[in-house]
Image 1 (cartoon, one colour):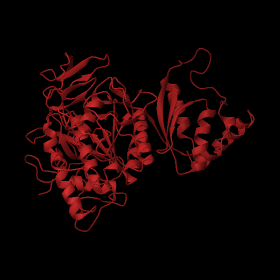
Image 2 (cartoon, rainbow, N blue to C red):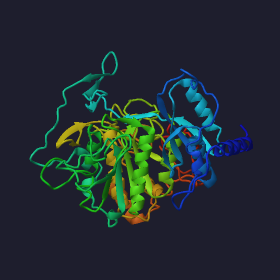
Image 3 (tube, rainbow, N blue to C red):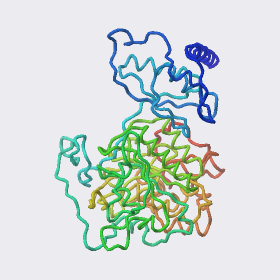
Image 4 (cartoon, rainbow, N blue to C red):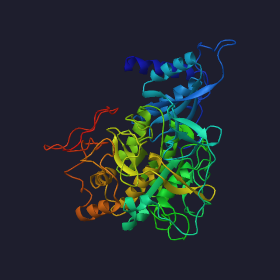
Length: 512
């Protein structure tokens, strides 16, 4: 539909609706849209709206709007309210509204067409289901099913299937252990930088267990309207990831994290409740948690590293744009799990260009059998038999790209703490160019990306050569500096343009 026609139609719609109710004065200094539109309804018959038609069930959809236009930012929600639709939330930083529409296919289609016809609306999408990323049987990661039971996937002649198992928890021992992944990423060879107080690592997952004797007690977090309190983890996945990032070191019990007792050492650990206690959630819930992370970081003037060991749904324009908002700010880096399908499929959010997609390796520097491999894989982390913290005060050894991701996120925080003048793309470049090549690897490839993240190598390069240490060998193509996977090598004649949206599943180039 022609934009000018849509704008005219919308203006007539708002004019006719506003005549139904008197205008009200705003109660605050920022009036926002005309309050007379909030309780008005557009007349007309929709499928199922007649006597005895349709059902009352609702589903949520995502509406991306033009956040650069103040007038459209007012007109779009006003038209939604005038239509009688419920706007659940408006995440203004990303220009994303979550709107409830009828569940029935016919009614949902009508409302989606209405929303797409509004001037200022850029995209309308389903609010896809998200979940923790489960591991595969031979590596033994256990997760909760929909009934709250712990299950482990098993493979066999009939393929993978989930079977209930007794959950065997590893109680903490009287002596402290250093999980193998800590040494593999060189975290035991480095110290925090002078600017550690300016770094925040945010784990977006199922929550946190503040009463655990091996987790920092002064972590902060943000509750979720749909997933509950951040300081409650009825699943365990979030606490396991948080323990890998910052479990207390030197206390004589349990395990040590990549950044030992990070909050006492000056770093900031924030928790975003992106998923519920069942381990599932929605795209909007994860985006809301990301927004909360960014709010917390900006409030304290911190550099932000977001760790997300989750996935679900296909490519989403709204989700992609939200991640790019964090990344292109120069102050935020998003690290996400590549997926545990053991295939070349693209998983999201890991495969968005603004995120670093993390593959999983084992203790002998080989790719984990479950780790997905594709051209968006950018870096690797330890992901097999990783021991970490779980509620209420226990430990478990799990596997998955879920476990690899917090290793990389924590290393990113460590490296950034040595120079906060660096932007997110520069830290990303240094992590990639200093990664350790794995078995049989020659340059960047689909299995490992650039290789296993290395804290000491990255910090050494940063301290010697500064923020642009990754140039000119590898990195930073395009003005937006949006690169991902192995698409980061500069040609001899300089940078190439940034990749287009969505990413094209092309083979990952391997350097000779």
